[in-house]
Length: 457
Ligand code: UD1
Ligand code: CA
Image (cartoon, rainbow, N blue to C red):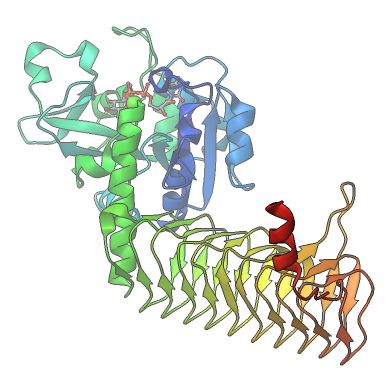
């Protein structure tokens, strides 16, 4: 059985009041349409066809490369949208239709829908749920035997039909052959003048083909996002879901309400996450780490037993048993080793710092390679920029850079070299050498007393 998904994403999403198409607005760091694609793949769908229309190029850019695209230049309704994918619908396919604006649907729910569809040998199965306020949704109309009869849209519903609390989620399974045939028969004679996908149900039923409605989920999972308010509601639900999944996996989250973890982040067990942490993008955090309050970590890897506090880490790698912060800033391409200390107000950019090295306070380390067991004193600046170009510094194993020194790149400090405090180093320093580059101290005995006498004249 070949499962193929058609994802409807051609609409503009007027109520978002956005210049961007609705489906690329993000929930927990991932575009809504990509949540839908992800979950489809996880539930066993092999091929995805996205129906695009509004700002299709912008949407296409965000989709996984293996997504097939069908264009719907005019949005004439959900049935019309599916027709645009007709070339992709083979007779023996099982076609799953989803909307790009229902990001909360879960893998288990889709799997149960597929099983229900297959086990009952339905030609079409719609996923439904019951809600106390069904306004706006299509209503599920069942016959006396509780079998699915048809779906009626809000605007076409009679007063009696409007009272029905079971609604259409907009997610369906279809037999490929039956879907193709019934799409040919839908028209736009309805309140909205649109070609409704929902009309295929009645068409099949009238032909004597078995159709089903699977009431198998909650509105929390099936809600469509049409406005920013609904977007924030979806975000809240997804955030709670993500946080709970990490806790189930053995991560301690001190305050779930103030911890923001995006959808693709991985965290090892026995790691503790404190309030205000923001873990974003493709971040991977090891086991037994402490992610302290207000730490923002984006697209970075953190090794086991590492502590990060009140720091920002972007596009970087941090090893094991290392400490970062408080108030450190690791900018892109920082590669920090094991047992390293990056202390307060240390900024690192495009630099490797190998195992057992320390920069404990107030340093800037940019465009550099720092070896093992190096000590970078307080206030050291790697001077990497002459106003036009950037240059690289190399500090080899065991070197000691005294406090408040400047290393003017390009420069190499060889192994075990020692830079005296307050030096501005402009030439390479040989292995094991001391480099002093500052004015000698001058002592003028009795100078203060003389000054005071002069001042009082
Ligand atoms: C649709 C269903 C309704 C269901 C609801 C669930 C129909 C006729 N109605 O209504 O029964 O309860 O979803 O959320 O199917 N789209 C296109 N091209 C179009 C029209 C829509 O790609 O020509 C896309 C939209 O971008 C959106 C999705 O299809 O992602 C749903 O369309 P929308 O207009 O929001 O349908 P609803 O009126 O919500
Ligand atoms: Ca909708």
